[in-house]
Length: 247
Ligand SMILES: NC(=O)c1ccc[n+]([C@@H]2O[C@H](COP(=O)([O-])OP(=O)(O)OC[C@H]3O[C@@H](n4cnc5c(N)ncnc54)[C@H](O)[C@@H]3O)[C@@H](O)[C@H]2O)c1
Figure 1: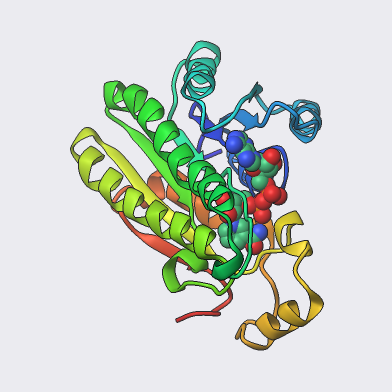
Figure 2 (figure 1 turned 180 degrees about the horizontal axis):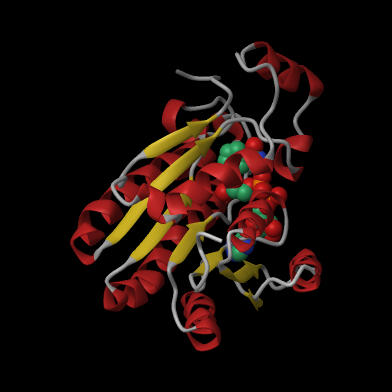
């Protein structure tokens, strides 16, 4: 119960990695504010699961691109639980295409959610954390943002941008007792990767030294470390979670 009394906001936590991260933080004792898009039924079901398990949970449906929605998300944490100690910028999408065929709309959509959304959430959460003089921000980047990936010009650029945002956030807010780190997952079993063609998955598997895809729990465990006091002297870092895919 290392996070007892702490409050965590996890964006895009109706399903997938976000849900697994929220669950891990809840198991460590944190109060959880779930967030997902308005049309997400999954986030309601996740909230019910968390309540049934006896966790302290609130839900705010809203878009990370929308400043008012994000303000409401932060307000919910403070009003309901009295603080905002951990922000996990997890909400993200892909719209993959070879660059020659990629539309500007698809470029903008991915950059807006994956990068601008994280900026808006960080800015809003930092206001509270600065007053508290403490906080942990964890950004969910990707190996694509570190090393590039064909067919993912928009996604790679958004995640590389997120790594830049991570380092600047770490430097700007370190004097206020706030840390900011990123994780860069490789191929993790989820709805986002289920849609990849079998030959692409096979090719990845051949190149993963640990010989398997990651699980959402593999990611959640590292995020939990970066959200806890165990990582108090770690900031501005990017941790690959990829079974050794790139090293
Ligand atoms: N799955 C992987 O292999 C993998 C690898 C590296 C990085 N990631 C990153 O992990 C994060 C989660 O990915 P996932 O695989 O769980 O995907 P997912 O599609 O299963 O979940 C993403 C969640 O974010 C929500 N979301 C989308 N747009 C939103 C918005 N504007 N505002 C609020 N919520 C929004 C979705 O509704 C969904 O519930 C993403 O940032 C993704 O880029 C995933």
